[in-house]
Length: 121
Length: 152
Image 1: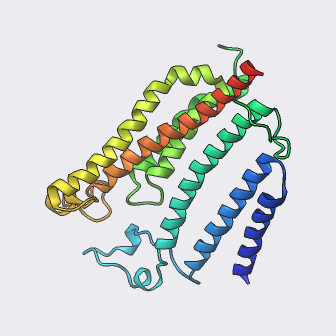
Image 2: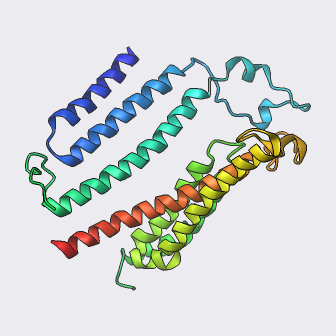
Image 3: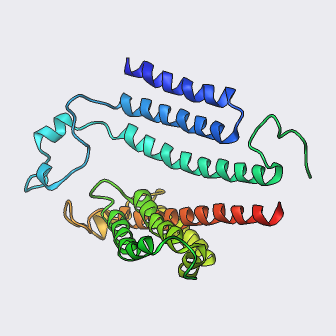
């Protein structure tokens, strides 16, 4: 059920990219698609009753051994690390897209992709 | 310079708050191997303090404080430091990115600040890199805006 909602969110982003004619709205649609994929990956790593995979003083015994609760209930940190990396990359691409949009606006004076058709040197 | 930027209320509050944000960013970077956070999150917070300065006092003031050339240099230093740490692992311990400091030179106890070998160094490098380059991204986007006004 939750995965279906993820797919729905992705489709909303895809609809926005495919149908909207405003460049800024297309960029927003791309961002929504990225968020849907991130949400999907995070939900793959979800575990009911899990604890964060971060060691604190309360989880480490005097000789450096881990507590039983931590060992048996810590979630997998791999999807979270993956999503963190994906967020970093999406930040970079978003900055690039916005810069391109500003460039296009300064040259054509509009965000409408149906009017950005002429090649200008 | 005084009439640039936002109102006197925002400028007054920005004074102490920018220091707190900057220190919080440094804290997040330095404790990145123990608590949630790390190089990227701390770098974003560092860049956020300068973006706040830029929004409150205008772009000129922030560029006086941290010129673009210096930010660009910090950016490159961060990348270089990260690559150096990775290559030192290859030279000293045999393979790329290996944590050569951890067992041999810096044993350190669990959950201490100085405990994870090269990971805090990498965090520092990434924090420098991300902070400087995010600041540069915001500065460059505002330069685009000025460019438009000149051209059209």
